[in-house]
Image (cartoon, rainbow, N blue to C red; front, side):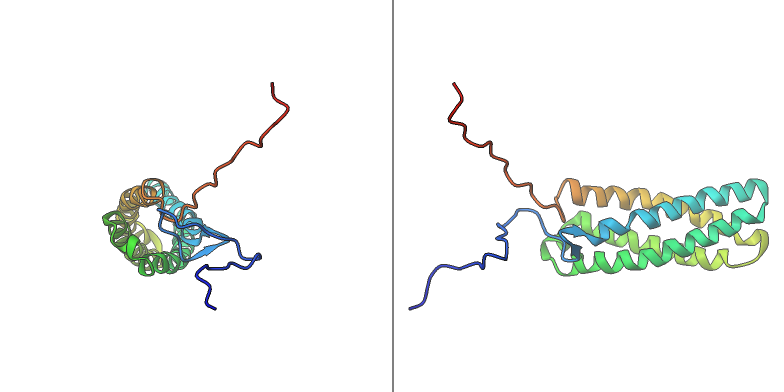
Length: 177
């Protein structure tokens, strides 16, 4: 006889359907993209700050800091893009969100600006930062403000990758007056 009920093995926790789109690239329920993006954001903002200091001081070490920050930021961005692309491409609900499309498109431009900026910063001397590198660093951070806002909206307004908290029920107490 065929059972009409779905049996869940006891070792597999039952996950109730949720209104929130789940992250497909996650570790123990934590979205990988969200874990990675603070690194490139910090690196790209740090690049802008060290570019400004180099522009004002002409101390070559600040240009070196910028180049290393850009290199780390670009490498980790590639990893974040892979995780974000998995979430975006594997979920129609996420792809259909205007906020997600703005976030993805903007971050593609951020990545390209940072990559070009990395090549510019690989030159020697003053031209590695002023004026092209400084302008690209500024544009990258400016665009990060937009894409970061959209990323915040995906998590906090649309609940992308957010696991709903289970309802906590107070234990019944028979001894209360």
